[in-house]
Image 1 (spheres, rainbow, N blue to C red):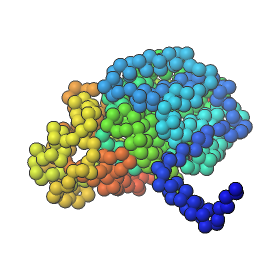
Image 2: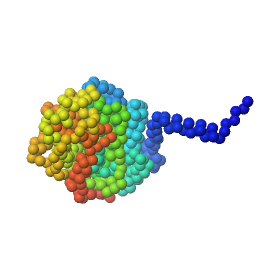
Image 3: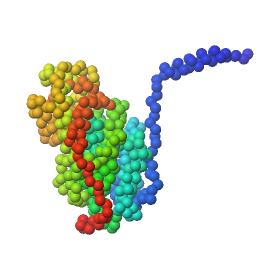
Image 4: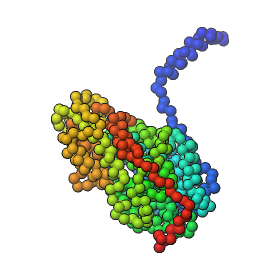
Length: 498
């Protein structure tokens, strides 16, 4: 016998199904897995064809960057020395026998690709920008007078095509202040505890600006081929065995290119710093992968393009405007430079805010006393981390205006600056407190309150971010734009050809 279902019954059934679905756990929407693709241009493959040795070296460098993601995510921090040495051997093998074609990052870091796909898209999009600008500089058919126009086309393509992930063209000084990573529990871990691979990346970050500046001083002619060969020999013989002790910025080692295309030069600096921040986040064993992703995506948002950033692209100074990119001297090797200066400035700018979070209850107050803070077992160099600052109740604290550091804080300030300098130097130095910079800060300032939650994944202390951005504005906001690079006369590179 046929059973007839009334409209009322169907309606009731539909409502019941809808109610069940509404009560089911929501499934996280997967990230769009779009890939980065080369546009067709007249200069496409020029770098690959003309400077194939350098193209293959770039592929080896990108292998190193890719592989470390999964090493940090999948191995315990306590095994850092063993894992650092193990990966570095692989990196050197790839460098000495580089692949003919660059493999995709997810091939060597499949776990990180699944967990943080936006990160890989962001990196790949800037790698594409690297390759397009290298093509422009390599192509003989793009006249010297056309280089600027073509470079601007590459940046416009990048910014428009990948606007959802595009990094800012503002100088790193600005984006680092937006990111606010110095007060996070992970800051400096990779630099200090994975020094072999960290230093190889510092060598790679010498290679990138040296490549552009070598082409800038050689012109389109035969000198470009000769000088590029010299640059790669120098990289092999001196830079890889004795890498710089800091991340060199574009304006330091490629000042001519930075004047010609400040947008792309700044984006490259922002990517290189993003690498370091990502590794620190992944190395930190106090958070779950979900928390690491939350923090990483916060950093990506902070370093992304913001309306008005184009007004800041030339707000930087050139320490060595006439530098010879083929002279690898002590200045290039030193840990002192634009990066160190930037970090020290940021610490100065945050000090008044930090003092406002000092407890008046004395050093035994449980607010930031490492011996009394709850922890989850992670231990970087013996320093235990506060994992849930929101659970701590704030105490009454004295208020001070921005820029004012009370007399009793000056000595502490100098001690913090000394520790920061040590933390900015790869490896562990004599007199350096173990762990991250936050560990050192907690040791020196055990009664500092962090009830604002800024140490939590995905969160920041707004007052500290504002203090740093105001500090940059006061120092550099009225700085004259760096001058345009004249391209009317093509260089020959004769003076530098051996």
